[in-house]
Length: 327
Image (tube, rainbow, N blue to C red):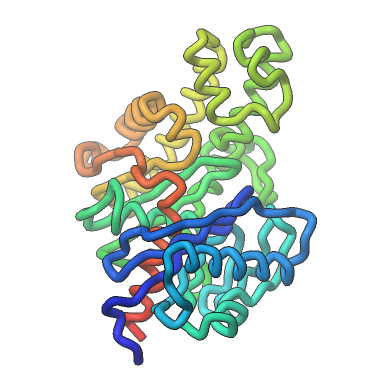
């Protein structure tokens, strides 16, 4: 087995709109990174070919050869077979049953760790971000959906063959709206960016959000985290109330999870948090304190993520290094 000393690690984030590859040194410091937009008009085979090409570009930028690699970590949305390293379904891309580990091992001849992207992001914050030094960490990342991850004493909490911590599908509204998962009342139906944008678009349509009307109109594709934040700064109180209500539902889900798992750190990450950190931290804390058991109210710290887009690639690279150490 190759020594991990002085070896390099790839962290790869196969996100909803982009793919990002980072090269990390043996101390898990980022050396170079390259990115491309994902494409919904290509199949899995050509998509993985583009992933491989992006990794080669990142290695070239870092002046590192494939022979110097200790391993590759991939963070990806969608259900996975973690034991086999297979992406079962990527809803944003339409890929099904993609043998990521097999393809990348064949190309680079090194170990490949495959993980859920939010698990990777939470782990990245644990090893190099806002949760350094914590014993247990809950990560909550609201975006198009809402992902969750949990680190306990240095390892990710997961199922035997799949990831867990689907906090976005925790029921928070009995008999609520229909979710994409087929159930009703999930957190995603009231607190994801898509849910917030839909409510905000209706407010624009009713003439209640004039600033957002100028910024994005009623086009959901244009009502993104930054436009919501700018509308609030511009004085759209209705938009602010919509966002605060969504954040309070996240706080309810956080309280439920704290009651179950007692993390000492809760990390909020993703574009919504980056655009409105103060608002989300305030509302999540208020709702969590209101709903959590009294014994747990002061046992956890609530903070915003620090690493931004680099969280998932940092965590993925760290998971690859950890897997190599345990091999």
